[in-house]
Image (tube, rainbow, N blue to C red):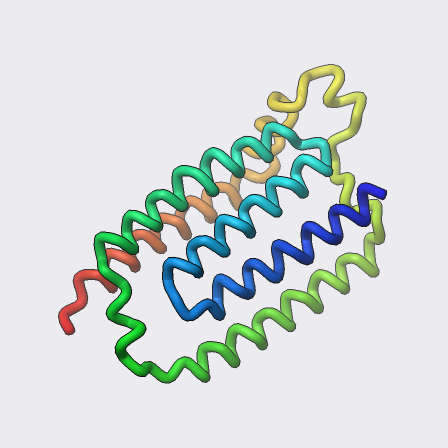
Length: 169
């Protein structure tokens, strides 16, 4: 039964993510991103990772979305609605990327099945050390490189946003 709810919430998160891309208004795009973040938090709860769910809500749906909404208000991004910019190529590229990612997910699901959802964290490991200790051990030992790459990508995104905002028109 949990798998059904996980699939439903995953589908809702994917739909909300698509609405982030295809929304006409920047503000609506940001609000759909909040919906997507909440759906991911629900998936974490269904996977019995309550700590990650709370971090998802506090950090992403709270702090980062407030930062994005503040940037939207400060940059007055309403101007982009007045200009007619052809975005057909970027939408096609986005759809192609979506299809490729979906095919990768299907390949992983067919290869590993439902057991891939459980991951390396066992109930015995959690009972012995606690959820937060097990999570932090995996995050800062086995998954340190992806963690650092994600932080570099977030920093690059902030720098890119500043460069785009300071661009002369």
